[in-house]
Image 1: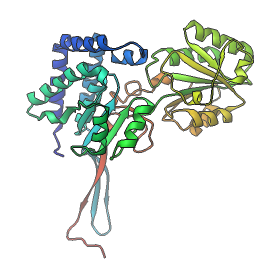
Image 2 (image 1 turned 30 degrees about the vertical axis):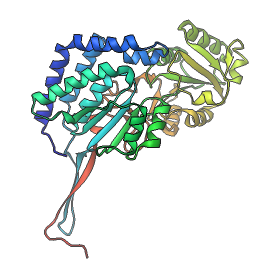
Image 3 (image 1 turned 120 degrees about the horizontal axis):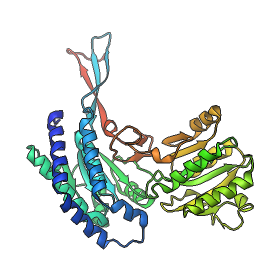
Image 4 (image 1 turned 180 degrees about the horizontal axis):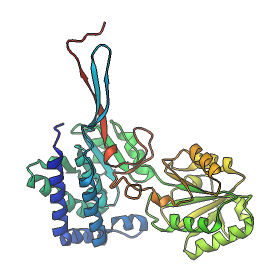
Amino acid sequence: MKLINEKLKNQVLESMMTIIDKNRDELLNANKKDLDAFKKDDQALYDRLVVDNSKINGMIKAISEVKNQEDPVNKEISSTELESDLKIINKTAPFGTIMIIYESRPDVTIEAAVLAFKANNKILLKGGKEAYNSNKILVTFWHEALQENGLEPDWIKMLELNREETRAFLKKPSEPIDLIVPRGGERLIQFVKENATCAVLVSGRGNNFLYIAEDADWKKTLEVIINAKTDKISGCNALDKVLVDKKIPNYEAKLKELKEVLETAKVEVIVDAEVKNTLSSLELIKDEETWFEEFLAMKIVIGAVENVEEAIFKINKYSGGHSSVILTEDNHKAAYFMENIDSAAVYHNASTRFTDGGQMGVGAELAISTDKLHHRGPLGLKQLVTNKYYVYGDGHVRV
């Protein structure tokens, strides 16, 4: 794939910022069509669909942040000269063509495209039908920015395919695809895994857990839980499960206070059998599948554990491998928990809501990866490249 110099890439991004800013009304009108057509049966999906002036400002900021980051392509990773005088240099290189499949959020049409383009990748955008008009106008803006700067619009494409057409495309793409990123729920991820014929990098479900150790600061604990659960229920970094150590002082009183605080915040609380002994009025977990579930709603599970080892076991068994938290004043216990939890992000005395490219200093993100190859956590600009070895010889042959 042809490498574009950094100056030209940044000119395209500068044009895009200007185009979005000048055409706010056109974008808002397109988004209104999507909102008017959407049945509000899924509040989390609806929240993700909304575009307002604040969201537009966020789009422009995301582009600006990526523009100001160093070009990640063609950077030297390592250099070695062997005794044979063979010189080997390892450099970063673009993936090639990335396809992202996502639901609802029009801002992904900005963040995914700006990151892929700055990292010198082409991108195929397959958004959900609920955001069709919003995505369509944003891709039109991208094409205008590319053409203003003498580049072909095929660097950023919108795929207008239904489910069956998408299945066929995944099985037999009409053009080479190097990486697919499904960004959505469990069904979408499974659909892509079953049908894709190239590498898939999973932006997994949340289902995030928080463990309250016996020595946790209770004030901090309540503040962190409320923020992690209620700040943005549509976020994959929202909290779904709380595990309380049974040895915590005033165990029953604290369970009752936690229930009251959550219910005051309008969070539905369900409990395991042990906690129901204390909070008898609450609904009991129906079956084991609930422990695996990502709610994306004002709903939370409270369960009890004997110790940190049981908490680690449960989290590693049931969570989505996204974000996990321990509340404790013991740094050694925190370190033990964080080292043994198999999640992309592990927290000590902090909300899961920080698992986000902007909050973690990465800037705009393509997704939050829960895969281990080639990267876990926010997929920012530096993570959208692979590598290539450059080997320099002078008639060298292997003997």
